[in-house]
Structures are given as structure tokens and as C-alpha cells.
Image 1 (spheres, one colour):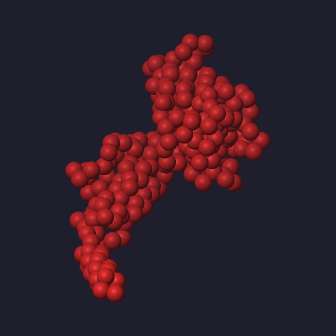
Image 2 (tube, rainbow, N blue to C red; image 1 turned 135 degrees about the horizontal axis):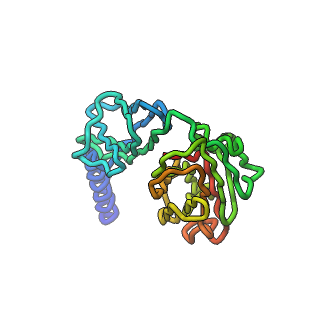
Image 3 (cartoon, rainbow, N blue to C red; image 1 turned 60 degrees about the vertical axis):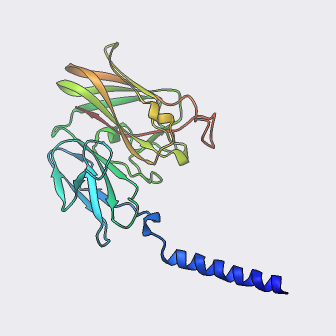
Length: 266
């Protein structure tokens, strides 16, 4: 009986210690939620406005504009600001009593004030399930939503390669070609593994994207293909999706989807 009584007393003392420790537990074990990051326009010809918000006392929002990591030495956000050039905006929240938040990211792309693409011909056609707006939608500078279901901007493909024959409105100097694609791996949509650009049969640009096979968050992915600087009137862009979905994914070994909503000439 004495043994049972001793055990009960010990259990009560342990419970009291746990409760006391819980009361005194440091708030540093809790992480902040991510801030809201919004831009007035993803594609813009002169100015886009950036707004970042997080409503919590003593919280500090920090950000970067070059795609680099956000840390304690990054710029502090105090008010909406304007951008006049393309940028990769990243932001997170810091607080003296809590762990920092996850990072949020939005990329904005400066475009020409004039329409540069006259015509695009795709081979093969997009899937009947995801036809988008046809090839005209690839040059309308309207961004598709990350929640792609029901969004008419996205064209979806499930094939080995996609070829886009592009005619420009006039001879123009080009140094970069940008593809706006979707990454949504939970729905088997992956960025492509490689992009090649040709002019009259000669390869003038190439970009490999090994991050396509790495697990990552969903969102728009802007792939910039450097072009041999020169004057051009046409291109053929060949996009190579991953051969198959990687081993870490539940759809491993099957063909991934490739989604695109815009082609931009710079």
C-alpha cells in the first residue's frame, strides 16, 4: 500500500513539473506563418507595385529582390514599393519571440510595350483536357492561376517533346526567351528538363533545368533561355519534359504533365 501511495505522489509531482515547464516553455518553438506577398501585375511594361503584409505585433518583414535567400541582414519592408525591372521577390517574417516564417516568392517579368509575337504553331496540339486559349494565349501576357483547374490560360501536354514555331512581328534584337510554366507536382505537373531554341536550323539557345526532378513547392516557374544575341524574325523552341516522374513521387515511372501559359521574347 505504501508503495502504491509513493508511486501516486511521484506521478503527481511529475505532472506538476510538466505543467510548470509547459507554462514556462519558450515561444521560440513556434514558427510564424508566412506573409502575404502580392504584386499589381506579374507581367508589366513599365511599373509593378509590390505589397507584403503580416499583421502581428513586433513582427518584421524582410525581403530580397534578386532571388537570393532572405536573412536577418535583408531589407526591411515598411511600405508598398514599385519595381521597374524583372525581379524574383522573396519575403519572410521575423519576430524576437518566435521562429522565422517560411519564405514566400513571386517573380515578375518586364515585357515590351509592343506585341512581339505574330504567330505560334505547336506540335503536337495541347491535351483536349487542357487546351488553354490556343496558341494566341501564349502571347497575350495574361498570367495563369496557380490553381489551374478551370483556368483557361494553361495549355497542358503529356508527351516526349513539344515544338513551338514562332514568327515575330518584325526583325528584332533578342537575347533572352522566357517560358512561363507551372509546377504542381502533387498533380503530376513538372517543369521541363531542357529547352532548346533554333533559328533556321541553327541552335541559338539551350537551358537545362535539373531542379525539375527535385521536390518543390507549387507555383509559376519562369524559365529564361539565353539566346545568342542577334537580330531574329523567327524561332523554333523545343521543350523536353522529364522522361518520367522521379522515384520519390507516387506517380514514379509514368509520364509527367507539362503546363505552359506564356512565351516572352526579350
